[in-house]
Image (tube, rainbow, N blue to C red; front, side, top):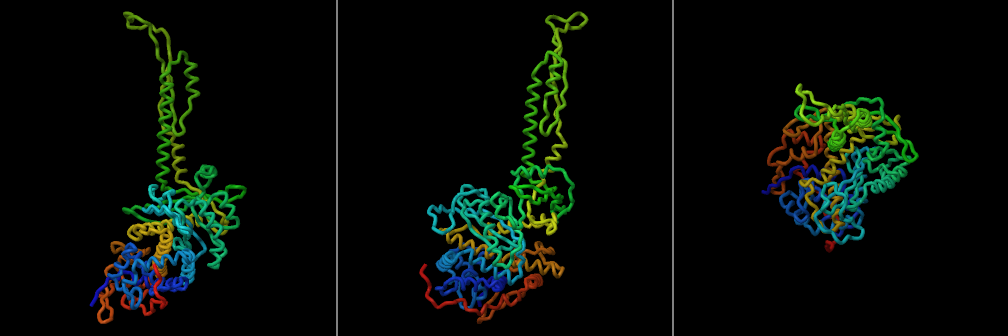
Length: 550
């Protein structure tokens, strides 16, 4: 009898079957391998979603698993050696990495009825340790660029993601390490109508960060609905923020407590409009009571510099002596306050006495009267409050008419950008992806396809659980065995970490029956418990052709 740890991987297999990505990959790639390319990719996806061994250790990873249950009858761990994986990565790149991903996402979105009306876009950098001195023709260029990882000493490539429903990857790409966000947005905007036509959608809203707001991109988006953030370096941004108006209090958009205290921001909004490059756009000015820490540091620096500058000017006039009151008064009247500080100036008389001893009555003979200026500094509370309030503001630029989307909905839609940020956290999490140990840039691009495909499956499981919990008005056990209405795939995976299967005389059985928490998760995922003890009967080999040369 043999025993294997299965953890949550049979659930991954079930979702891969619903997505149909094994069949999609096999249909797209010319197969000359004993193990189908789609099955190899499924093996890599499972490896990624179980913490990921480096590619040269995937075979070792599967030597500790029930491979037949996970990948198909008759398959052993040796079939997933690094040579076979390398050949599949080569074929993926030769076919078209993101062309293949688009085919899978299109099939998946139709099966799961995913809403594609709102598209979120963003980019992030991924640092690598290799030299990559000789770029490959037709492959991503691994070069130095603006590092969002704060690692300018390392070369990098760029992930670009289009997501729907907040965090479901719809379209992706791996770009050169020095690719410009502004130019990337321009290329995506130009391609969007063709991409969305594949999904049968002509009316959609494109959401991106402030790199979208350039003259060239705004020209490309004429007639297209979008939401972006107006860059702070636009004079219109500070003008709109500083403009007076009536605020609409909308409170918190979400609730999260730490130590019993709700830490989520409260918002206020007001509607404005702005003219940019000859076109009028709708703006939503937003104030958050959770100020940006970087902005507050900048404000503190401004206050400090203003006080120092003012103190130096006061020191300069305080060191001077005036021979007549009109001159001193003239200096006081011409003295200007600091930007964020007030000064209270007053004139002190300084008598100058003649030489010699005082008279017997103690009275000294005054020769002349001179004047000096003294000052006290106080903060301009009103200016400081106004600046701190403006520091909590940002401006959303949109072409969506007010009758189609209220200012509150515009803000909610833009705030869903944090879903794509969480996706970048997944793609960079060392516990999931480790470092990229690939020598060839085209294989890095193909491995990026595997990682984003893994991300799509991971988010689909999360989406299914949350929809189930919401529709049934129930909860699942989360961290520390607490009830949660927002289960995550990581939570789910942790609940199945102790699932072991035994194999005796060709029959499989669980060492320990699934408990209530595990069954609740399976129910929310719409997965049958039999996935842990039944191997797939579909043959993994889709061709009898001999294996291709490495």
